[in-house]
Length: 437
Image (spheres, one colour):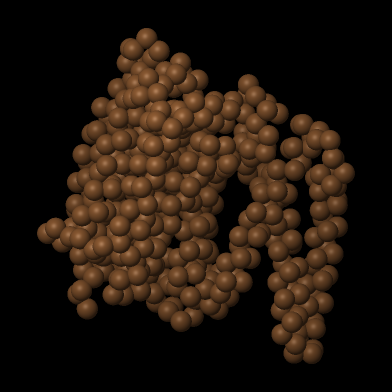
């Protein structure tokens, strides 16, 4: 897997893994449109083939372009994408509850997908220009701001799943560039605690869990404000102590107090920004049977489909959950469920092997890159792909909340596919120019 093989400057293993995944995707998008009596109700597979062909053209074009030149274009691409995201909020089409599409008639794209590549390029340029200083808090915070701008615009659509991708991409790129582990862990801890504090009020009010004491307390605005005020006082003591006594351990006092302060503030924002259906997705992740015919239906049917596939599966086009239309969004969010039902554990392992090759080759390319910009870009792309796979497959087997993140290269959709292929094209460009310096 790690051996370097190339043909006319093309990373053979990376190319084979990418093409294989797209072929599998077309097969199961076709299967998703078949009914229980064998009739085809969808032409999505035809459109997917067209998007694959266009995407391969994009891949070749990006791979043929010297990656170093993207360094100069990165700010303009990033600003342009931000403008388009604002335009999408104002004039975009609403699809599946989110105003995230722009286009004419049936032709449209999802700018938030392409914004991932623009943000990766901008972050890579930013971190390269501040090499050796990324461990400084102001530099780390500015980098976070670069990722936060498109993320905030996407959350306003609202599209929680796509927005979440920007978090691991930023954190991994920052860590590779030299960010302090404490800064990275701060973001991770605040993010997880914010989600908990955002979900608890809905969970307590709508489903009244048995143990309500802590939940009720944390869902009360006055209690949270009192807690926040207390931690603010602790942080103030830390600031005074550090200024007066010059003791470094006061920094950790401030650090520890800042986590709940930021989380409480984030939960207030989350409750106002996130729609109720997004909160319900997080709640049914904890227990899908609190609403088995509503928000929990997707997880229950997906886990049923995956489990029914067994070791070798029921055979291609022989699945029941998908052909009886029990799986919602089955050609996009739950394409892995169909694959696992029809090809079983063995088929799933084959898909994992392809993704493993792709991710491993991406990591090797990042490690062998001859400049920091290439290394950071490669790390960002690999993180984007890995996060999509981890969350989407986790959704399908019930170990991750349903967030609407597609399985790259397999799920139906042109925007996500083109974004992934542009990312692979950048990896190939870095591979081709690895000996330039």
